[in-house]
Image (cartoon, rainbow, N blue to C red; front, side, top):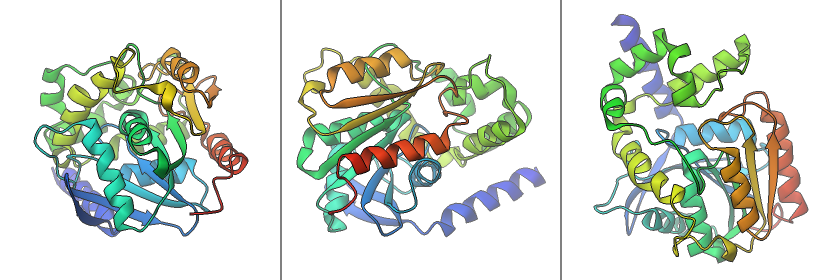
Amino acid sequence: MTRFHSEMQRIREYIHNLDSKVIDTNHGSIEYARTGNGYPILAVHGNAGGFDQGLMMANKTIDAKFQVISVSRFGYLRSSIPKKASVAMQADSYASLLDSLNIGKTAIVGYSAGSTSSIQFTLRHPERVSALILVSPAAPGKGPIMPKAIFNIFFRNDFIYWATITYFQSRVQKEWVGVPEEFTLTSEYEAEVRDLLFSLLPVSARVPGSIFDIYTSSPEIFNSSNDKNYPFEDIKIPTLIISAQDDPLALPENAQALVERIPHAHLLSLLDGGHPLLGHNEKIKSEITRFLHNNNVSIDI
């Protein structure tokens, strides 16, 4: 227990030192952190994340010359979640955040489950979006839904979750991180997977958001093929979709379906790396930079 309390204290101090801020919107409070001084990119984290996870993912995949605005989505850390929360509300809260920061237009990058609200933001506020980037995205098609029994056991209690990832990482990394069984983990990759797993702590501060993601937001995008609220063909801005061919969570065929439906979409298909795209951070970073430059999304704010 001493080790657990020590590591939890370190994690809480780390999050605190990231110096996030909270503003009020029509849909409640929203937490964000802002780094850099270049063209703004709104970073939207995945399931069980928060602004801290968004910053971690942005650090891996977005060049430091850009400004990153990383949000905590509904129910994560210090962001509230409204009654009868919807993905549309989540998207509208991004517009309120940009208003408060006096930012008229931004590129947006959605990681994993963050793709759903990123797509909705693009559909609902196209005048605010210069480019859409989706990394290992939740997309229309088949997708995993965590059984509630598993969630209730492992993702509500900090100690149980910590003990599981500390002593049984190899047993949960496929289902929880999306590492393919056949993928060879070097010591460097194992450390990266461990960092991803630990970035979910404290899970107790992310429960409402995780529930919304797993049982509302993700099923909505999985079942959106004929949903009038997801007219993918109406997305006219440059779009980059990044997917691994061996991703067991965000299936590559779903990413391909998005590319076929979004008129100006480009697919970066990686041979391996699974859901966390292990081994490809520098390639992804350079591709995102090139994509934004080629579409003139690095000059005017």
